[in-house]
Image 1 (cartoon, rainbow over the protein chains, first blue to last red):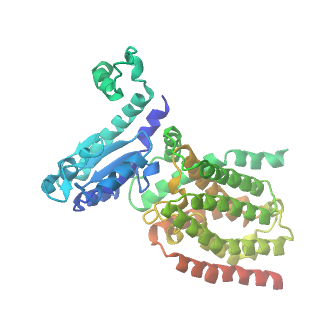
Image 2: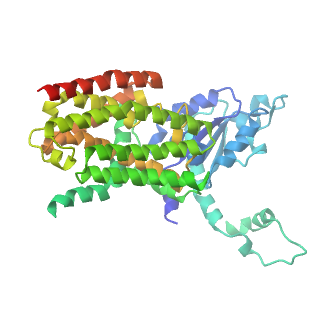
Length: 174
Length: 279
């Protein structure tokens, strides 16, 4: 599809802080500044989940913020990509095992790209976003493809879950 | 036949021209901040991407109001470019803004309501000034028809400079530029009334913004009369003025905006009207 290539040229980013220390958020803001200037790739930092393509999450998921994280994820229209930004968002970081948070955002929402570093560097964030763009393009193709057609029709007795089929045929697709 | 060729072309191409203006504006704004900035065609890339995203509708009336906002704004622009009544044009523009305000109120989102409130307040701020400017134009040319104003020999700017200053003061409110962008306020209310639109329906609201640029720059062009060179000069001046102002100023709250616009811009336009009546 032709339109998919334009999607790579205008990714709109939604940034959410799920209870981190603000270190990664400052680095994300540095990306927008004159030195790194990610707007030259057409990226805008929108605050609005209904119009954005990439969800950039920082911080471990605290018990207060997890509902909001899932709600924001649900409000984003397809196709969408999630980037976990920093050590806390990826694994829990120094907060792992504490009473108020759980290890990483991938316990609640599916994550496509993990960016490492405690205080991620702006270069790493840009690299992560560029990788996410490739996934964004691939995701659309998966959306358009019918998984069920790849498999023979089954009897009523042994109905298969759609996700099981997807896992089964994933090696075939790639 | 030839008289209608240029206006009709402008009307048909208005979204494309507006998109180019918006793209150029983003580049200029970035260069003012010593950034490289997005490519010139960036608004069109955004347009194509939004067309492809999955649509999430709050309810059908909301989506319909968003599209009608775009359509009525285009209609208002068409009447303005074809030489219609200036008062009619101003009220058609008001109608399109009223539709988007209704769309804002029709959802249950708090930010959307807040944005609709603020949009209504900004209408209150700029509308009286526009009406006074239209009446001043009537006092000089003796007609509300914009078609006659385009052909007026002497540029209106020399007769009513204070009205032009008043227009420059309210244009940031109309285009949602920085000192007076309470209606949009991306960091506070994340876009205000346009918050709940998504996909194809956000596109209507997004493209309406481009049409607004063409509308406002046509209003500026009115001040040059039949002098096209002066008109282009005024448009270029207004463009750089708006961007410099947007980059160099912080947002004021709605009370300050209302006080400034009704206190300074309205009285400037009114003094201008008095001078025009007396002389």
